Length: 359
Image 1 (cartoon, rainbow, N blue to C red):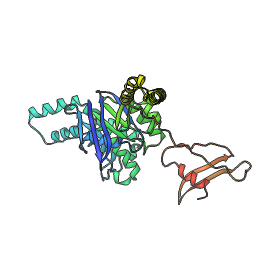
Image 2: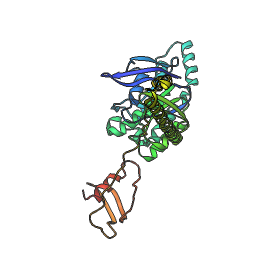
Image 3: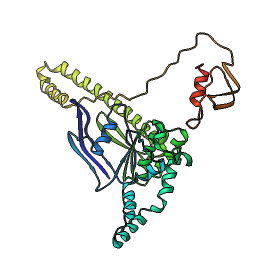
């Protein structure tokens, strides 16, 4: 499906991708990982043809359709469902051609193609994707322009999923999703019949929805079978092996250098010393392996100890104007509590945080 061979790309003289190669077969689901700024999004743009490489080849099989979420959220007076249905351009074009009353022989061809495309289930498929991303029946009938930017990015994602691409490229697809929609997307991608490459920091998605990790590191691409946890295990083992090999080489270089320093001035050992000098010159120093780790977070201790409870909410209701967001809320917060607030978008999570912060 996708072949990348000896790919090199530079920005302002700085090499971002350096002779990278990878093969992604048809039907594989890959997670593309690497530190921020390593070139993951740049690689996507090279695959789609938005950027041209300085060297190497990016080859996508035949007439494969590439699906990628537009960076700008759609804004239209059309309903969400209508907008998503139009995203499958081939299907939409055939349906429009039917409405134009083509000749009987052409009409027969169109109906055969529509049957192969399972056109009869198009509306239910589009509605199912929108529902999975958090839009109920009433929301699906509303104009896209009525929704905020974050919700419209969900619509853009729905359009891409519905369009049935052969190669699906997703860049941080859970950024605008709540927990429920993220879990739905995980399940959807795990069943995706095409080829998938996803950039994500969502460990759950990278473990449950994909079967291969492609690691972009120092401009090179390395492939690991399995999910993210298996990738971390393998890379940790590689770091240990490489560091061990480097330590052995350092000791060996020191031993050889010691022999040279000791015997190079002696006539009886000069030939052996010269031989070891050549050996040392041919020995390529192994580069120190630096494992990328997350920066630790340290929270300062409070200056004074406060007895529990730190905060208590009793039968509390709060809202904006006449719209009540939280009703009859009861909550106690004690020292050393670790509380996660979960819920669908719009249910009042941020409102609760602002309330506790006195805002």
